[in-house]
Length: 309
Image (cartoon, rainbow, N blue to C red):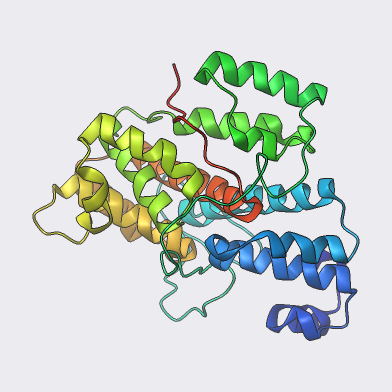
């Protein structure tokens, strides 16, 4: 998100190779550092990552804004990659759900190729408030969002408190939470939707979202489903639709830029339609975006799941 500030291709190349040695201000070096950790391993982030941003002059509102921008960019980029939506530098062609890019078997591992699932199991962050960042729980925008959450969930999620310094993003977060509550297509069953959310929250090691995804999965598939979900896609005995859906969700979460028209075809061969494909893609990209945000800001898990009324 800072790269457009540098039209010089040599400087851009230096930034992509190693921002810490590039000829840019220290504040931007730290912002790039935060962004890279946000994408590659948000579950490894801690209060020290925020302290580094404060040390170069960023305010609490700046920090929340930067994390939220990263979350928004995750949602849009994963959706674009998985849906084959044309973006600068891409050569695309493909099926009716959008244009899918050429095969990326030889592509380098870049910032869109996080090693999801490589970290330790999720643990609740240590915090005395909603998150590691500052909050303003008296702000009019937050109070309006809190009323919406009370009506919808019966409580105010800590995620909303964690971004209270940036009320302009509340509608985006509300929309994301609404879309995650249930499938948005007819052919995708609630149990498959729950499986996708549970799998993604395991891959991102997000303690915050697992409060909700585990409860949603248990409601749809039973308590035992949580422990088997990460391996269901690779299990030949698993229902074919489950395998296709979970394999695709894992691929998007790990390497969205490698999605091709073959992935769309696998849905059709399993009896699903393009709408179900887009549904799984959106569910995965939204879940990853919120999980990275929660991990990077150390959002404290809620006492109960967000399941909607």
